[in-house]
Length: 512
Image 1: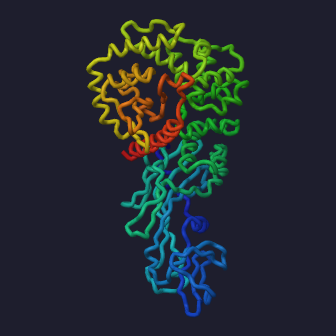
Image 2: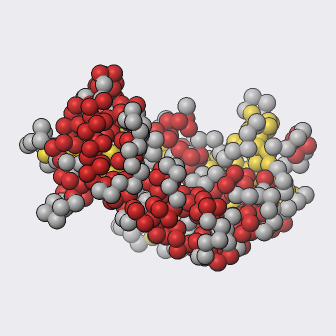
Image 3: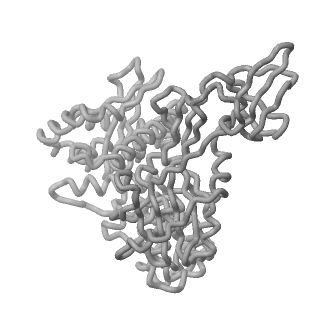
């Protein structure tokens, strides 16, 4: 935020006739017509702004027509239909450069027509565009300030935060107004115009104009907010680390994970020159893993190759195993593959639930040790957990999906989870306590015609609503028990089902 920002309002850039011309293509255009006798038609085209008389065809109400005079697509409306019902609106961000600052006026523009539905004067037939101020954003090289327009006093007032457009992240494109034929646009459809003027401001090196073709308005605003706080953010774009910038814009990588005080790009990222080509494509978890590896083994050569092998085991599982005082080389050597790593992680998690703790951190026979530990965990399952699981079963109903052949059930007791693991001979019985605490979610997949017979078990992360694992008999380890196609299809459908729930949850948080 800018201290004492009122001086920024002394010379707010005016909306020009050029701006008025720029917004026209974002609104629908019409052909107001009247069919005459003998197959002739008169119509007024709002795109080429003139009457066309005695055209050799007839038009129909709501017909999509390409005007033969201007070549633009227009929608035919009967001349006496009532143009006052055709009001539309759209959101725009109009950019201006002034005194080295970038001003963005966020406005709602309304398109309307004369209420005199019988007036055929060309001027009255033309759409009117009314600009209504909503917000004003002002960017200086090292700070920014938002203002909200107050209708009560017709002036702008400073806002306390430096975020994006309020409610923009809800992604609303359109909503219906009071009339069935009145359509208004939401902030999610905002169009940013004239961002190229940024080259005449102190933000000329932000690279925001380079990103404008690939990011939404919200994304550009987020990047500008990052840049005014950290001007060296431009190095990410110019140095080929645009993917890292994308992670920051999408809030998938925390700003404090970048060493902003450094002037060298590689030091900013904590990346070695020999690994920069691979690092540029890392996601946030791979970045954290990379940094942890080179800290543990500062002399390692080509750490990116080592990271690639570890990532195939699953970065989440590797991170959890590393917390058990295991080195990354031990994890890679003993884990071997993703399935074994998950089994190993489950074994250690179950050991930590037992009074005696971890019996052997890298047992010679992992599967046998895992199953023994599972039986012990089941023995220690208590009444309190069972009661908690029964309560949870009622709250998990929104996460249950069904198909034509499969249904999902939420466990009602710890005994059900243990029985599921015993029958399918996998490790879910060791998840009783974690499920009861809400640290994870265990759900059963059954055939609709055999709802009491265990088939597959699925684990869901309660925070991210992502599928952690989904296994059937013996985790499909035996050659005769492969994951069937109906389960693979079910997993894909369920991932999309969870994504929809997550979007609703996020939107609710933003509007709360």
